[in-house]
Length: 271
Image (cartoon, rainbow, N blue to C red; front, side, top):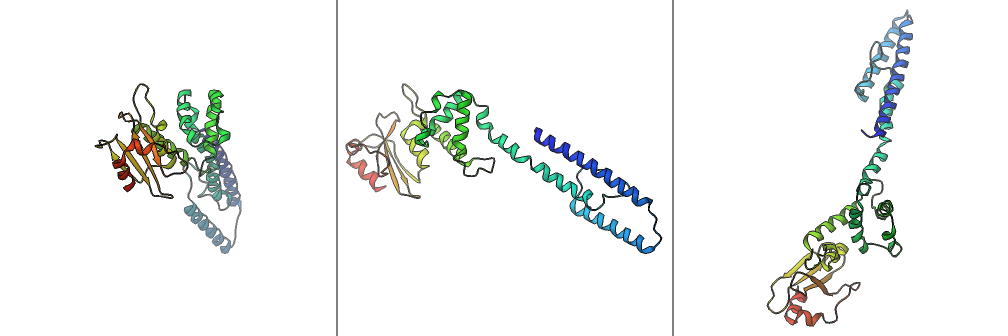
């Protein structure tokens, strides 16, 4: 059990003990009083009835002691359990923050580096060039702050932007990893980069064995802004390179038409 919750429960127990003592003293005083009129007796019965009704509505936490002679008296003795629950809830944010921080707190330096690498596609100019010279703890702090500034729901324990991004990284590393003399992780390939920056395409045209050119793929995006990307396997070993796109923020190879060939160009443009 987290220390914060243990502290909350100790406060709750102390509050219940004080409530029981006050209730017991009140009950003893009432028993010492004598009433001679039937109206006073009727009033007392009505108060007890209201007390029991209040307790049934609010409920009594497990382990709460009954006051001598019956249920807790109305007022502080009945409301205290509700206040104790609110007090316990006050410790929840600290617990949730601790849970959120575990992503980087226990990661080794190689793991931190692997989490940092793909961020090159998201970084602002003032965030570049700082990570490499940091200590392990400094790297943890950098990653925490990087994602803290991009958290769409900072008041919740989850960072949906971070979760979505690293889910994409895992996807591209599984699908687009390239082999050869030195294996290239999927996030460093052209297809992996486009996937991370623009999300999964809405439609894909794949030509793994075309008759007149190297294998190629065409990705089409239709949400927010229409875009098209053409990738060509230049080596025939699965190393697809981006050769053409109508996205103005990306580069197109000047010889892309010759690389792809007229038939494949027509095929890609019709898609």
